[in-house]
Image 1 (cartoon, rainbow, N blue to C red):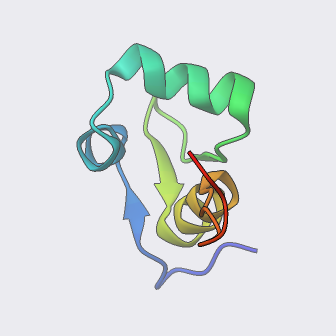
Image 2: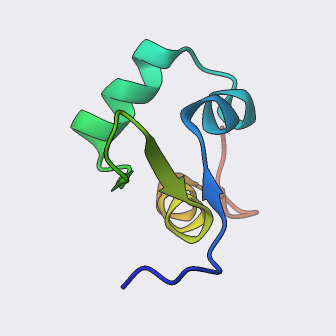
Length: 68
């Protein structure tokens, strides 16, 4: 559930954090499950907590014994 004290990111914020274009961000939302909060009036936001969880789920860390 959404709480009023949660940090909400704009699309521009997330684009800059990921270094991607608006089109790529929209693809990540549509095809890759990045959750969006719909505040209406064409004012979508992404909760920081959701963004961090989504990013963690996409992060792959190589084990020390794995070869490239």
